[in-house]
Amino acid sequence: MAFDLSWMAWTWHTAVFFIVIACLIAAMGVWEYVSPGGGPRHGVLGLNTTRGDRLFISLLGSAYIHLAWLALASGPLWWATVLCLGYAVLVFRFV
Image (cartoon, rainbow, N blue to C red; front, side, top):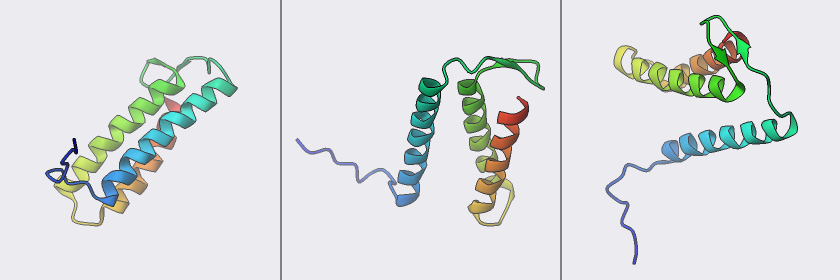
């Protein structure tokens, strides 16, 4: 029985997107294995967050940044990706 996925818009961009997320989750697992715990931090938002929480917040925020970019900007989407990398650095540093 073959699965027909031709109705989906699977492009190399989509594949890279899912591969990057899988690699981030795997890297977070390795980081947790090597250095367990990570100790929750009390950040700028007033939340106690762990490394996994900060990864989730940065991924969720990155999705919204990309959606806002598509709705409001006319430039290439790579600029939104660069903006998201900066956002992720700020989240891991201050949240």
